[in-house]
Image (cartoon, rainbow, N blue to C red; front, side, top):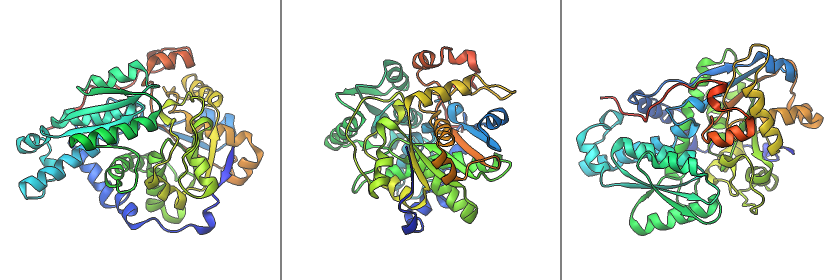
Length: 406
């Protein structure tokens, strides 16, 4: 299903706080943080000319976040970065002087971090990032996971020393429980979704994602005409739309938000013009996007700068995974998890829908930018859906759990 943004006629500039968070000083802060991560390197931007010809568009580029910081997901940039910033803020307050990212590995900052506990709810990838970030600074982490999170993803989180708490129900239930327990015990919640009175930390998480876009704008040969980005609660979509709007101004591409058809909270929010929680239904194969209530912070951005919203079926998402894994015409192979390929699924469905194709102006001159938001973070599920082990598709860059450089 496709929906042009009904709010376009009411579009306003970004909120000043959001503009500062997702551009300018915020971008410089995440760059300083990455400069001290020994395991950091820019993720590749892959050109897929063969697939572009098959689809009938001019150019297709995919930013491969399956190779990010040893975690295989764009989430590696969010939770861990937010943990680092929060530790620095606490240490600055206690030591009564301003500390920057260069102080993060110091003993005095580590002494502060050792007294802190970070908690979050997760479908898998965000929790790994928070757990990794806590381990890097010497803090404790407690990660809440819902019934649908696989044992493989739970084990990957626990590998960073996190305590795992299983919660009955869905992701939204785990968000509520994490917030409740953290409030009782004085822990710090690092959530990638926001709620009333809780925006600073989700803003830091989104700020971390802007590193993807600053890299992409350096790597792209031309400014894209269209961007399709998948979304759960809205963080990555909002960060992408806002940053491109800030960096490119009137030259910015059309921005299309892609929701799973079975968890289309942003699509439904666009229909009514406000953040809207939807009923829980049958689970979607796009497990990392299975969210039923959007982040109000992300919606505040998307309601102003997104051009269209659409939904994609599980079947087309799996088709997109397989097209990336089995390239033709000399294209590189890309390992894309069940949620990672949703942006490509959105492009495929838009091109197959004459009304959507016409409304978006997709055709031979279109230059499309996508983000592969995750690799095979659950190899067993990837094998079930693609019929190949991820290592048989392409060997990802090796990545050990990150360490700060000194």
